[in-house]
Image (tube, rainbow, N blue to C red; front, side, top):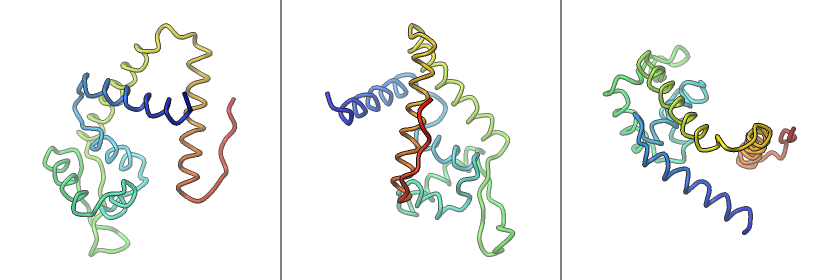
Length: 146
């Protein structure tokens, strides 16, 4: 099988596993909270662009997260007409619990793999993510595998 087919098969299997072991958050909600936690994006329009979504779709997603008490809006200190988004304490706790749940699922799945193979997989996946991000940003620089 080609690499692209194996990656597609892997992502499909992982998505299926996460859906079968449903957590507190949808995958789309996790993405938003991760971006806000990392302060990668703090405005609705930036989140929509980063996720490749229409601003109205992101607005509905954010409204849902705000209703659940996971995010909050604040006036932008640089532009008082705009708002920036941030996680609430409950949002941080919920994201932390979801991350722990996912780590457990993956750890349990790979429990019969030797540690050096798990480490190698982690390094290669990190390198792949860097390459994908660089390609999206128009760069070719990536870290080397260890």
